[in-house]
Length: 637
Image 1: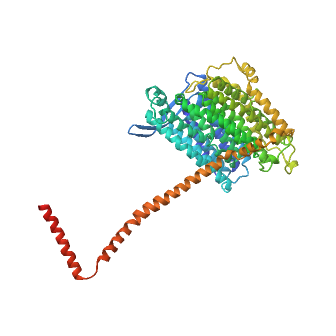
Image 2: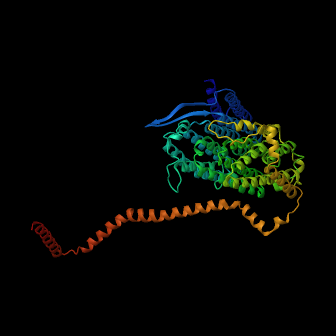
């Protein structure tokens, strides 16, 4: 009972944090409200750590409860509750640790903003929505948290509401996610129709009692194929997978701290978490998992390439997020859920670190984000430089860093699958690892090593401790989080393991990983990046017409935005045409205006037949009587 109370205190404290900071304008100054909000989130983190320790140290590995019946009519039961197992307890710690660091960092980053308290209210509410999603024990509660993070992300991306580009960006994010949500709702409804319940426990315990794997629908696909496919399309939008990734780079219009929170531990990881939580459904559908595998591998490679040509420091990191999410999704596609979640866990720390380092750089350069106007910051921003270096080494999978453990394990599992489609995905992910090294080191070399190309170099200095302390914390977590690999491999609850891949220990894994193809890709990527971006050596092969044409396509971001604009214009023009033909033609023309016109025409016809002569009327009466009598006589005879 004590532990169950702690579980409920976590979202409650976050909600209180949002309300206090949102309505504290009269009795708290900006700094005080920021400290209060950060403290409440930190207490939530402590509670989540207590819960995690309890689950891993006791025989009680699951806390499950319905504490409130929300809707109960005609057999439809929807409640509010929680399901805390090893999977969700780790996710709680990841979300709350990143949120705590971002809260602390934001006190310094947002200090000069007049809407300081509104920002803190939003990020606390954002964290609350994600926690509601993570602890949910049914699909409806998950959907409420799902929509909550979507709504608050809309508010945060458009935080600078007087900036036109920010308004366009948050509207774009909102609309693209509505596409995914439409399919997500269809998937939830189909699952309910099959199991007559939204509850995870009921669904998982009745998998063998339904006919969802044998019931064919269309195109030779089973009911479960379509159900899981629709749910995954929802995840494609939320976790920014091709082609529904277009909203994420534009989300950089929001303040940098929220970019760290969205990209590291909340909104974009919601789709990964959802599929992991529903993994018992996904292992039943080979078609959908193959589709997931191809989408993830394609996203990892093709979106990663865009980052090589991007010059906005935040957008480079944003594209890297999409690419890394592709790795996680690809692992889901071979049912390696623990491996995907392990990479989510390590990625959260080093991606938050990279974004917060970018924020420190942007502040020091008076909000310049163009890397072409940076350079030589190694000596001016030593703490930021070391932190950024650590984040970069992690994302490229440098040996002994967290990214090395999670990415190498993911690639190893992909190769171990030994199917044609997984082999294709493995090659794509290996190329993506090479691309990751190139764009990551490009950013490092240009920002910190090349000659400074902006103005006021002598005035550049490191930010205050409230900015640099979060960087140090995340640097430590980024390095050492990978050493918990065994915790993730042994995840048992509602998750499937690492397909019989075993290592005797950390040392054996390191020895194996250093000799892997991923490490060779890292070495090649380092060589290419150093020659091009640090030593300014030109490769002739990059100057030929073929590569120039390819670069034009990549710089246009494969014209996904143009595709969606064209599609929306076609839909708009079609709806206008339908409106013109149906509404104006049928409704207005035939019904609204047609009826009175018909009556008027008939009245004119009758009026024209009225001559005004008495003998004409008498003749008409006589003829009418003769016709009537004739009809009567015919009926009688």
